[in-house]
Image (cartoon, rainbow, N blue to C red; front, side, top):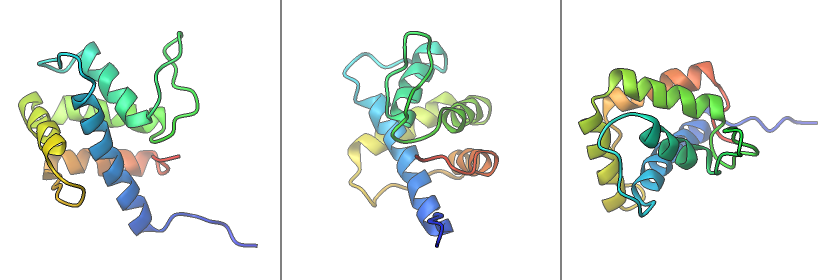
Length: 124
């Protein structure tokens, strides 16, 4: 009986996909986008990263993408280590790029890697 554990490559691809999807989802909500880190940007980011809307109590039930702890870790890391303008520029790049054309800046990738290490199963 074998256990289906993701290979490092599959996990890296899934994490990169989460990164891209979180930024693209927050960019494509159709609403005016926040101009700084804060509650509105975090709410958009968490929806894009988990793949689900929050419940009335603010929890994310049955996330289809990233786990809430992973996504929260990423948001906190971005807020602490990546200037908002750079995060926004990366977000805009994602909206204009085709799949496979996306390059994640080193400081943003470092945030994801750190969160992946502390939350080893970022994707459901």
